[in-house]
Each structure stands twice: as structure tokens, then as C-alpha cells.
Image (cartoon, rainbow, N blue to C red; front, side):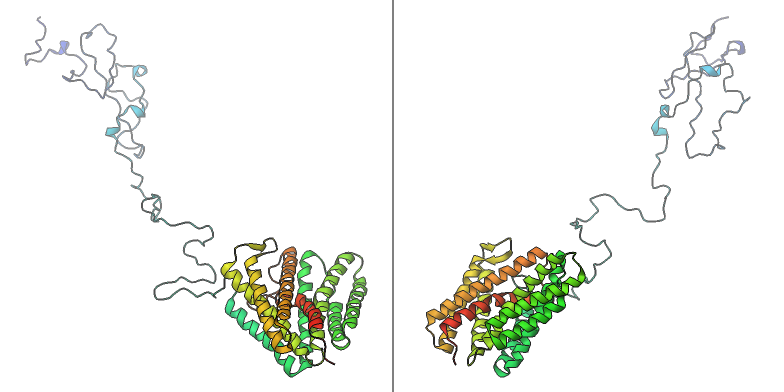
Length: 426
């Protein structure tokens, strides 16, 4: 029998028909080549790949149309052993035939997704000190066009609330000058009260260093020292200091020996610094005839020194005077203090005591230098104790000792100079 003509339309007979599907006229690139069967027949036929089982997607149910083969179920081509079938690999399947899996196809949360792209995020300067979004810091409110920002109290260049400082300064001046010229015993009461407040502030401040000076004997001894200086003069002032220190030591014995030396040292410092130096103001006021005028020129010299130093330092201060003690003090401010006190004191002493202006200028320079040294001394004590102000008793000034620091060093200097320049009448 003649072989089958490939160009004829007649189909082959049944015994010549192959069990395999007819070969395709084009190659199937997506199907791996399959080796022909190791049989004697059809060696000349083109090897064709068997139909591969479809790959099941991960989101399809195992009960779907692509069930795994069940034991006993015949293959499509039962002549081919299962050992010769190539393993099915997920990565062999072309990715183009699988639909892409979108992350947003199934929402995992009912909340709106947060965008992490930098392009859609507004540029905001992050501040670690700012509160988290949606929460305001305490004591502040958000400003808007309808509601302006809350106004803050204005401060001067020296970091002080200048209006409050001026108001408190004028009040203190009136509290001192009114009884000084109209009721002199009232000035003694004001002076004793100021000394008592200064002792309390100093005792409160030194406790930060671990010292505990007894407050009761210090207060009693301070008032006694002022009274003795007022009525009996310099000798009684020294006696009052001695009584204060001895009374403090005896009082402290009741608390035991622990820290005795430290507490007595702090108490002695307070007794010398506050009531002893303040006693010279009592002796100035107690001078017969012109005592109130002596206090006036002394206080005026200190006020002129502070005002001139503040104005010159705030506008021209560039060279620090003592940066480790008082960083805001400058040599320009010190020059302003000396010039203002010298000019003002020369005029006052010439008008009030009929003394040559150059002696008044010398008095002003000495008082200004003493006032600056007193301010630096208190600043050094506060630096050592680690406090900014002795207290917050006076708005814009701090504590009362922050105002008495200059006066306490100025009154002994003024007392000595006026005792020479203006002898006591009577």
C-alpha cells in the first residue's frame, strides 16, 4: 500500500492513524519540548509536548475546575508513565497569563490609607519641642485673623520687665522717702522690716547648698543691730553684730553637732552682709540736723549709678566686665554708672551741703564703685548657690536683696565720706 500523501485530503486508515494528536504547523513556544516515546514506531514524527495541567491560582478554591488528580483517575495519555512527566513549577508559567494581584483589591482596613509619598506631604519644619498635631501646649492659644495672638509682657534688653520694674522702684522710693522726711521713726521701722526680709531671703537661698542657719536668732539679732546703731552709733553696731553671732551659735547647739560649722558660717555671713551693713543706713538717718539729707544723697547716688549703667550697657555694652559672675555687666555700663553718679552727686552735694562740686563728684564715684561691687558680690553668691534671684517678691526685680545689694555696700562708703566732707552739726 502506498504511503499517505500529505497533500491529499484523504484521511489515513485506522491502522495507520497515530494515537498522538496531529502536529501543529507552527511551534508552540510556551510548551516545553517533550522527548518522543521510546518506541519503534513514529520516530520520524515531530515530538509534541503533552498537555500540561493548568496552574491553580493562590486565591482559587481547591474545589474549582483545577482539582488535583485523584488516585485511580487515568491521565490524558495513559501510555506515558508519570515518572517522565516534568515537574510543574510556578515560575515556568508565563506571568502574562496570570492577572496581576493588586494590593488595594481587597481592603484590609476600613480606615483611609495613609499616604507615605513625600510629594503629597506639605513641608513643615519639625520641632521636637512642639506638641503633637491636634494638641495645643498649655497656656497658649492659636492665633487667627479674627483672634490675634496673646500679647506677652514686654521686657527690656536686660531681660527685665521694664514697666513693672519702674513701677516697683517708684513704690519703694516713696516707701523710703515719705517717712524719712515726715516721720523719722517710721523710717526706722521700714529699715528694720527691709533687713528682716533680706535675712529671710538669704537664709532661704543658702539652704540650697545644704546649710541651715537658724532663722529666729538671725531675725532678732538683725533688728537689735539696727536699733543699737540708730540710738548708740558705731560702737553699738559692732556690739549688735557680736550678740547676733553668739546668739546664733547658742541656738544652733540644740540641733546637734552634725553640720554645725557649716550652719554657723552661713549665719555669720548673713549677719555681716545684711544687718551689719544695713546698720550704717540707720546711722546716716540718725545724724542730728541733716540725717535725712545724707540718706537722700546716698540713695540718689545708687539710683543714678544703676540707671546710668543700665542705659549705657544696654546701648553700648560690648566688653563684658565679669562674664563668669554677671554676663550682662559690661565696662561700658560701668563707665555709664560712674559718670552718672559723679555728675548727679556733685550737683546734689553742692546744693544741699554747700560742698565744692569736685568733692561731690568724688563722692559719686566712690558710691558708684561700691554699688557695682555690691551687685557683683551678690551675683557671685547667687552663682555659687545656683539661683537666679533671691526670691520673686518684687515683680521686675526679683527679691528685695536684689535691690539692697548695691545699697548695702554703698551706705558704709557714704557714711565714711560724708563724715569727712560734711561734719556732723551739733
